[in-house]
Image (cartoon, rainbow, N blue to C red; front, side):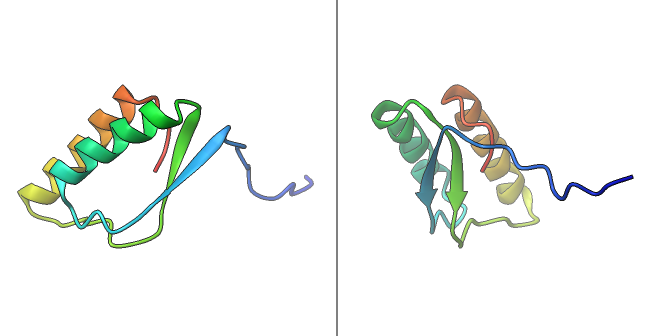
Length: 77
């Protein structure tokens, strides 16, 4: 078997983001804005300070990321 390396999916367009710090209010404004200004973006490359915390707020943040990405047709962050 020949190893062809990792599977690479080519996104149409990528938005660069960072410093969300687990802020649901920030992401619910930023993700729809990305979609309004560049509806062809399907990937957000997050550079750091995402805000992944183990407690309930962290789980709520991830659920909000999923919701807003689905609404904006963002396939991955």
